[in-house]
Each structure stands twice: as structure tokens, then as C-alpha cells.
Image (tube, rainbow over all chains, first blue to last red; front, side):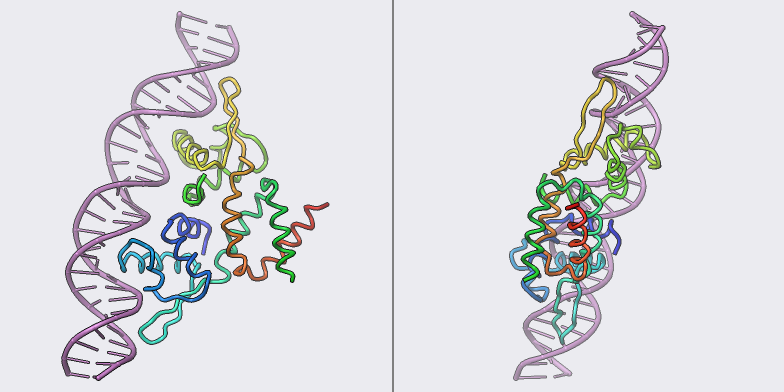
Length: 104
Length: 104
DNA sequence: CTGATAGATAAGTATCTGCTTATCTACAGC
DNA sequence: GCTGTAGATAAGCAGATACTTATCTATCAG
């Protein structure tokens, strides 16, 4: 839940790939593994790191586990990044456009 | 310059402390070290990692080196985070307020 | 109950990190 | 030239990381 845990979790490409996959909805471990050239235990370990960082949530359904993005998980990253706002040059324009779009 | 390098760089508390210190302007290596309970070479190594990730810039001035935040350095983080915008709950309101403030 | 399957855990290992002390390079002042 | 200082680099090391294979637990289907 702290910045170090979160940034460490995000530092691994396979873990970012797992999060990426969760963008389009809940998935079980087998689905998360698709496309990653690592073993089932490796996925399980990555998932544990992401859960420990508060980035994903899980819901047991019988013998399957449904993983999903934890909505509040990335908030500390946004908060941290916000402190460096003076160093976001023209990216701010893009962000404004984004927020306008979200209003609709 | 890629996401992995940047997140890895940000994953270390001492390196985040270095960036933090640069928020209020250019600093030399000795100034960056203040408050960090690590040796001079350790600071130098952290600075090298941050430079490698594109997060800081340096400017040699005689025998001193002035370090500063690299304005574009955090852009990939903001871009990455933007893809998860649907999972920023009420944080969006705060961000809107921030941008409004920046307009003034 | 039996067999298969989803996922976690254990144990081992190669590589990577972050740190240290020691040393080196380069500039500045005398 | 010499001396001091800013910072980088070298070498070594303890602990962490990311992976593997093997095994375990728990649920479902028959």
C-alpha cells in the first residue's frame, strides 16, 4: 500500500502485463497467464506481489479465483506524480482533454 | 527511458528522496546527499540510475555538477497511468481542481 | 470415493540490487 | 608544480528478485 511496494510491483514487465490484461475485466489466473512465457507458479507469485501492493483484488468463486483491478490501488502513484506537476510540460493539455472527455 | 527503467528507478526510497530534493531547484551531489544515510558513492550510483531512466539532467560547472529534474522524464509514467483512468475514483476531482489552479 | 483441474506454496538457484570501502579523475586555489 | 575537494568508478558482498520444478490444497465431475 506504500509507494515503495507499488513502484516495485510496477517495475516488472510481466506484472504490468497482468494489470494490462485486467483492464478489460475480471480474469482468472489461467487467463492472466496467456501470452506470458512464464510458468503457472510465476504468475501466482506475481499476482501475490500485486495483491500485496494493493493493485488487484480477488474474489473466490468455487475452484476459480477472479482477479480484478483494485480501484484505489494506483491512487498513491497519482498523488506522488502530482507533486511533480510543474515538470509535466505539454502533457497537461492532454490530461485536460482527457478530463473533459470523462465529463461526458 | 522505457517504463521498466523508470518504475525501477522510482522503486527505491533513496532515489525518490533525491528527486524530492530536486523539486526546489538544482542541487549538486553533496546537497543531494543531505539527510540520506548512505555514502557518497551510493548517492552517485543512485544518480546514475535516475539519469539512465531519464529522470534527471546534469550540467557540469567546473568541478561541481548541478543536477536538476528532467521535465519530460516522468511523462511515460503519466501516460501509463492515464490508461488506468477508469480506476481513479474520486481522485479525478482532485486532479480537476489542480488543473484549474494551474490555469491561474 | 476417484480423478482432474485451479491455484498456492516450498525449495532451490542464477542473477540483480544496494550498499560498502578503496581508489581514481578532474578541476580549483595557492 | 602541489594540495584539497567534487564526484565517478572498481571490486566485493549480503540480501532480494524472478524464475524454475515439485508438491500441496481445494473444488468440481463422474
